[in-house]
Amino acid sequence: MATTQSLDPLSALVNIISTQTAILQTAYAKNNTKFPSIDDSFQPGPLDFDPSLTPARNLIVAAATQLIATVDSPMGFVYSKIGGLYDTVTLGFVVDVDIPDILNEAGPEGLHVDKLSEVTGVDASYIARVMRYLATSHIFKELSPDVFAHNRLSSHLTKAKSFKEIKADLCFMSCISSSCSHVSSITRSEELLKLSTAFIPFLKNSKQASAPFNMVYNTPEKMWEWTEKPGNELVSRKFTATMQNIGEMSPPEVFTNGIEADMLKSNAIVVDVGGGTGTAIFTIKKAFPNLRYIVQDLDKQIVAAKKFWDENDPEAIKSGQVQLQAHNFLHPQPIKGASVYFLRMVIHNWPDVEAQKILSSIRSAVDFNTESKLVIFEMLVKHVSEATNDLGSGSGEGAVPYPLLPNLGVAGAGLITSLDMSMLTMYNGKERTLAEYAQLGKESGWKLVDVKAGELAAFVYTPM
Ligand SMILES: C[S@@+](CC[C@H](N)C(=O)[O-])C[C@H]1O[C@@H](n2cnc3c(N)ncnc32)[C@H](O)[C@@H]1O
Figure 1: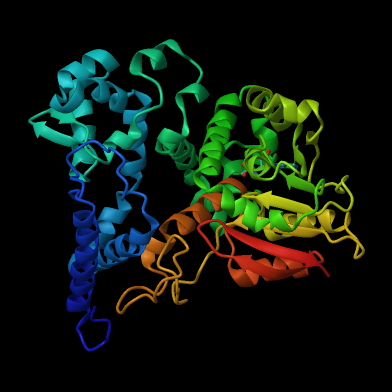
Figure 2: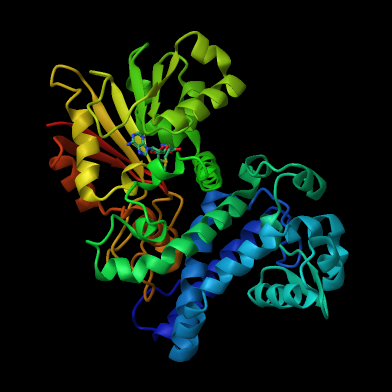
């Protein structure tokens, strides 16, 4: 690969794309499989999730995006970004009226918009325009005028249940599963779209409310308190479903390595602070049945957790190996001297002042005689100018070639920077850089001693 700056940027980008495409094609050829066509529904193949191909995929996405940004007219490129809200609403609409599920049952022949209109009750011309908008961005395909079918990307929007079951079942949660995490992300994004109307006013005067969320719902309560109130169940269920799906995305080793479970003595206590239903503990316990576990969260979440464990591992609760405990983490930590306290995707929900309070309250339960540690599982923000030596999936492989953005642009930091905006919108929370994690620890009595890299990184602290 030509990685030197001797090439002009355009040629260097094209070079990256062609070299990395050849790597992908060779891998598929070796496996006697064709590279999947965008026109076919997604059928998971052995190479689709092969981590050794992640660097090639990431480099192609990074280079192709940068190539488009370079060659498109600045007006055209910026305009396409401005229209981004229509991605959210059109995807939200098709999922809401179950078009992906209807098309799934129609098969490769697809359906005319008149038929889609008949089933959904929505005017055919609206459906045609929305579907054309999405098909123009490679989500769904238009086979012939006004006849639409699934392609590789749109088939991900199908819910876990059949269309008939969805219609018969009013429970939103049961339609969601890890196989359709995109669906729950979309419903969450729709909620975020509503909150985003307060984004600009909040940033211009952040003293007027705790977060854009509070301005839109006209409440001083934190989102967590608000969703516990009667009438707000649907919003609460959407977020719980998203969390469960996100939780299921990380391989178990992220958690077991993160807390160094193999170094713990039998019966050591592991506390999941703000643990939701306790899915992380559920994963760790399978690999380390010799430890004792406590899941802490607010009252309502603990009720949901009880249901989860009763359905999935009732013996763990009966035997006392797993305890579910209602605890507000802004108050003093009731479990003293546990071996591990961990927080997964909790700290990013909070601004610095409250994040420090949460960590300090855990610190107050620990003294120097106990070998307690704190582990925070979160994603790590890198500055755009900060060189990454990891091209993806923790591969640890190679440096980012010229002229790509040092953080690999949308291929490396697209998700985390977008999550950062979500955290700001919902809670005035934030995704943090390495320096910010170290500082947060320092101000609450914890020394950052290790960072285990990965899509979900583990930040390991000891008392100081
Ligand atoms: C983003 S979720 C993460 C849940 C879980 N750690 C996981 O990864 O699935 C944040 C969790 O923090 C909990 N939470 C929010 N405020 C809390 C508080 N004051 N005390 C205890 N838990 C709280 C919420 O109920 C929610 O379960």
